[in-house]
Image 1 (tube, rainbow, N blue to C red):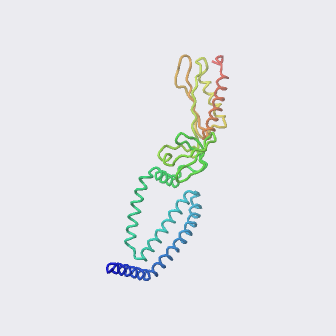
Image 2 (cartoon, rainbow, N blue to C red):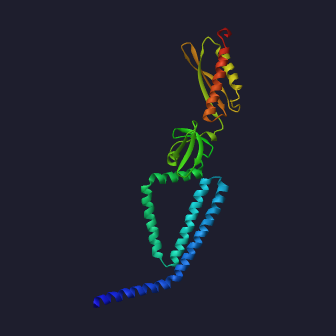
Image 3 (tube, helix red, strand yellow):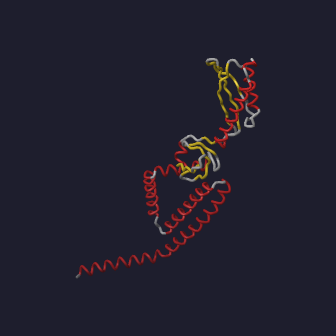
Length: 272
């Protein structure tokens, strides 16, 4: 019986002490809650304002979203630190930071691919090797950039397919951005019979290429012979075109082949 009374007395003293400590901490609890509420409201306001400012400056929704999210997290973290300081829980702050580091490290190992995609996406968003609307060639796909997110980039191919490529694969492999190119070089090879006047034929081909609308007059057009093979002479042709997209580039080659073929056909052995 005495043991039961001792246990009850001990429990009563503990509960009394806890209630007393709670009453003493009540002002601090209220102050900490008020501080957290204030920082939550402040973080939301700053997130909206920063998103608008960054989007206006960068013209990129991805950049504004990433920046505002980071700022929002930082403001909330500061508010949490202040609240714990008011509650005199400095040790809890230290433990929380250490725990966050350990959790972050564990998550980093567990989600390596996801983390790599987000980091690569951040680099793509800030470095901007391409933008929405650009025509690119990456990872074996050629198409127009439709959307850029932190995890993946969407490309619409020439056949109309939408391909979602992880940013890690784009960041780690070569990218051809056709939209950043002012002009491309078109190269053609053909054979001219030795019975033709080679000099006159080269002049005719050069004139036909210079008259093409696809030809970039600011860059030189070249027509020269490079080899002789069993009664035929190999002619190498090169010119520059401003039609840089793959489909337009192929069309420029098409018109050039037609022009070159027509010019050579006009040259007959009788002109020798």
